[in-house]
Amino acid sequence: MSQLWGGRFSGKTDPIMEKFNASLPFDKRMWQADITGSQAYAKALALSKIITEAERDTLVEGLARVGKEWENGTFDIKPSDEDIHTANERRLGELVGSVAGKLHTGRSRNDQVATDMRLWLREEATRLLSYLKELIAVAVSRAETEIDVIMPGYTHLQRAQPIRWSHWLLAYAWSWHADAERLSQLINRINQLPLGSGALAGNPFNVDREFIASELGFSHIMPNSLYGVSDRDFVAEFLFWSSMTMIHLSRFSEDLIIYSSAEFGFVQLADAYSTGSSLMPQKKNPDSLELIRGKSGRAFGDLAGFLMTLKGLPSTYNKDLQEDKEPMFDAAETLSGCLQISTGVLTSLTIKADKMRAALSIDMLATDVAEYLVRKGVPFRETHHVAGYAVKMAEDRNCQMSDLTLADFKSLHPAFEADVVKIWNFEQSVDNRNALGGTSRPTVERQISILKKWLGTS
Ligand code: ARG
Image (cartoon, rainbow, N blue to C red; front, side):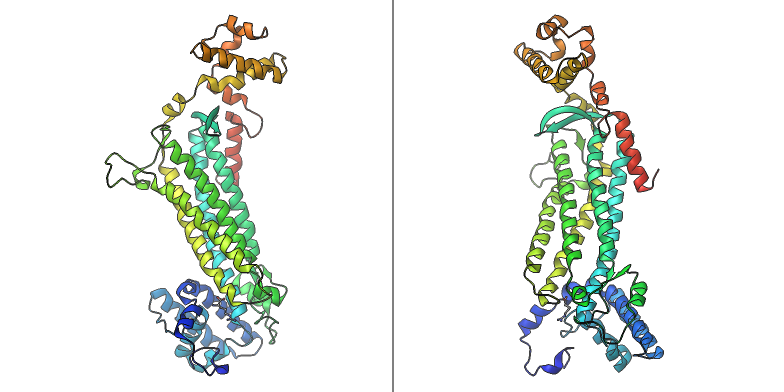
């Protein structure tokens, strides 16, 4: 009987069922976590005097040899290997003999798999956090060097008010900063030990769970064995984090796709992140960004699918939970690719400051006209109308607002004076927005300095 649970069964498993049941094709990527978790457990068994120190050493070393086989790509998968846990234990037995059969004492795959998942995701999330920080660092450093560049800011994708290009960059940097904060908080919640929960009711050999936690670097121990084997909130949260982060990356991509079109021409993607057309020789397509936008759908699907899996599960372990892995792996892989590509795109992006400036139009200073009158003591509701009349007057005469004379302005409101010409200055418009969080130079610099401090680069 090659299956670990073979004793109770007399009938053979349907070969299709065997394949259907198996998770090794995807959970083998947790081989390292499984080895590390088992080594810690072997040490705990020795501390509980369930195995001798010599047996412990045999198990720990044997497990290391199994790990080496995975590492070197020489691990020979057998058809009976159901999942990474059974595969490793089967191979351990072949390498060290019957003592391998002592490793699983008091342990279940239920607490084992929950532990492996947490170990795997903790490492992966930590790597994703570093990718996210690299992306933020690029945005912040460009924001610093390109602070003089002014571009149109949009609402409803209609030209609204002039803003600094840096302010646009930092808007995304702040979203990613929130993603990074969420991820570090999540890493703390991932970092709890389920091992020692047994199948559901707890461990009968009084294994020292605090010892296991410290061996595996867990900061907390899951305080209830039923909860320990059944909780997958950390996976759902990770999938939500992935979805939220993909929303930010997708919107960032969408902006850049629009800005890179000939109609805008604000930015140009590096060749390294573009592709050509097989038919139209002139084409340079922003495929990298389109793929990010497209892949966001996968992340949302991973989240929605897994929430459906969890809903309605009775307590503790149910095989449905094996469905936690593929969405988790898929989301981690998707985010790893999208974050690194975003960093590459942003690092190598060329900006066309002259095009951005040329896209600024005097009508975008209409709000400034209203604000000019406010500073002369006129109530804003009134100034908004007056500025609207000025826009219309220029439109009717087919000229710019800045072409209107002082007499024209005075005909709209007596508070206009000769200094009205000072309004036609995009830099000044931008620098007027100097309350905290605005697009003025000092308030953009302030954002840069906060983010640099957070990144540890200032
Ligand atoms: N491959 C299984 C999973 O991923 C391991 C746990 C199996 N436990 C069990 N009682 N059948 O969930």
